[in-house]
Image (cartoon, rainbow, N blue to C red; front, side, top):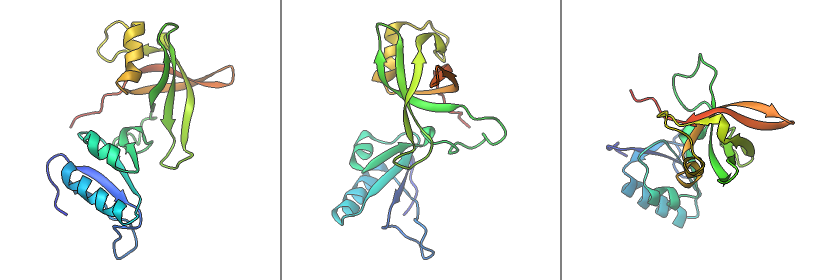
Length: 171
């Protein structure tokens, strides 16, 4: 399948197999991919999508499971030498009290997800340096911003430290 402009990457389990038995990765425009997804699902196939940017909402909703490549550990190039910070998305927030909980992945498996990472407003800073307000902190959940952070423990629980909005490196 030809590669076009803003590419999405798809692995369809058990459907796009090479001669070696390894799933092939298809790249195409979202509209083409959505038609492929629907055709595979109509054949009873499961379709999972791993993408980074510029993937349409329709395609993300059309697949069985969508994974943001930015949230999967080890997926970003150039982080081999440096210790990689964790990345997650806020799934629950108490705007009034200024805290929330993050979801993060440790891999692509169904059980490789944590939803208990605590983040306090005082441990967060905006990437652009503006002041953090309770409203802007709560907006991280609303807009599903990817957060990058270091991890620590507090009272035996995982806590996000030095968190900020993740901004991918542009080459």
